[in-house]
Image (cartoon, rainbow, N blue to C red; front, side, top):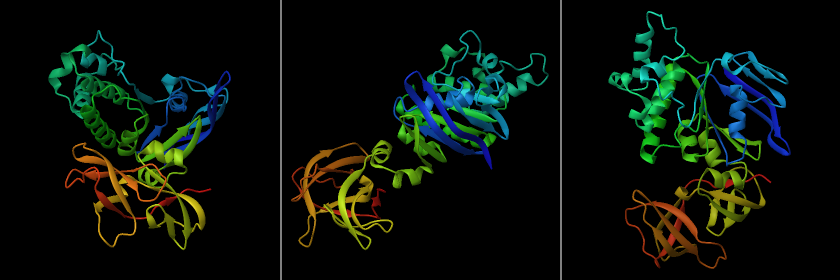
Length: 345
């Protein structure tokens, strides 16, 4: 069932077209990530859904209720939407308990119980209830901000770059924790982020914006393996892009004959993700291969750059494990796993 419907939203700031005819559906109980480079319009879209900005055209509907339609708009505080921002926006002069309970009726008999339950939900110790925000780590502050937003029992949760200020390890842990909390509470969420890995791992649906336009939306796996164009492919991760001639399901390219998806024929550009390519020691019966020109050790995942024999292309960069890494100057063969993606014309 669709909970949030965004229809033909457009927004202009003077000469700048921030959003152009954006339409997107968000399913109830799901997590959607809106991703794009700086200036793509993702934050503007979130602010329009929240009610902080008014679109020039288009319609926003939440669970059947029209929140915005042309010049008519429901005020932000009446939309039933929770928001967690990058800095958490906690009140510095209030304790954790007072931050979480802000807006609760003070005389309510179950107020303290609700606050404690919310703290449990975001996996924080109840001993933190008396602390002030400056006595918490960045991750703890974000958990308190999430608890405060959950306390209002929102129909929709908006997450505006909530993990970007955290250290790498903490960011991953927080991402997983927030996903668990939202799933347990059955709350639909929309995350705005510039971090591709964050979007792909957090969301059920990813929407890619570029220059105010919705380029593609779908499951993380579908977008990663089947991007609409080369710009989206490169934005979502490392990619090997090669010119090819396709005949009967095989692409003749710099890597030899590579199986491809679909029924395209003739000249095309194909894409492989680096993890689809395996570097193996040179063998006498090889048809295609090259020479290792760079080895970048990265721990569990390393990068090997291979210059292809007789091909005027930049070296291909391949992700591989740290086990049995080749050395610079080694002759290698490149084996392909799976099929290459073919871009539409």
